Amino acid sequence: TGLAELKRLGRTLKRRAADILAFFTRPGTSNGPTEAINGRLEHLRGSALGFRNLTHYIARCLLESGGFRPVLHSQLR
Image (tube, rainbow, N blue to C red; front, side):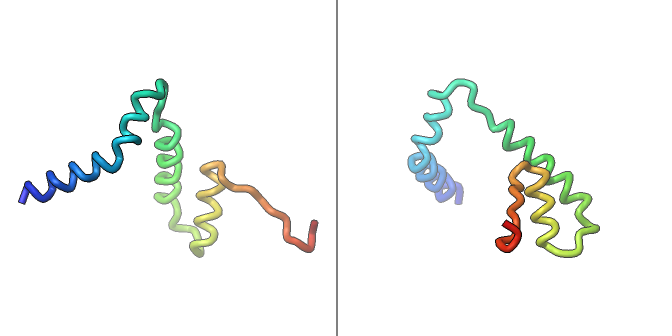
């Protein structure tokens, strides 16, 4: 019924109250950067048919989102 969903919503709001209120105490807060990265990854997923394995796809996602930090092999340091 609708009552169960309403109770669940109430519990969620109560549990996340600090997060919700923090949005209003921090002016200029935006999820824009997160959405921008998400859009780039969605575009990449659409063109991901050519990737041979999941490791290559994950590496490309990290590269596109700016989270790729190349590390030299331990023997090459």
